[in-house]
Image (cartoon, rainbow, N blue to C red; front, side, top):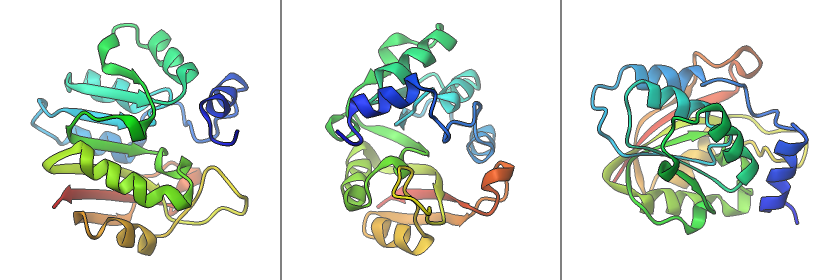
Length: 193
């Protein structure tokens, strides 16, 4: 079944994970480097091997949770970071998750969501954030020449999806993407209305 748990596990097993750059992405790294309040409750949904989680946790953000549909991806994260608290690693369907957070981090997860389900994703992000909570991350700002995943998009589309739920603090082409993605990613910083 396309985009099922088995589908994602098979991609990790076959190492067919082109979205995984093998380290924290620079836009997310720089965002967290400048944050002072390390008590925020943070979720990284669709975390995969969770390079961002490793970096953010080591900066001192200890109230950090990773969530993924793929047991294989989470196992790889656990093996690489055995010190990360096991009770903060969640193997679950994002759409069934029901905790609340101060901050949700997006890194390639959105691009795995079928375009027809993107409004459901935005609604879910909204429901998982505390009042005034923030959504930050990177989205592709171009279309792909194949069916996906990943699925691309445009800034105009993202604004339409999020406008009724979030105030836009930053929506701009990321200046510090890795070379293959230079000019092809948008950095978002949104606040829940």
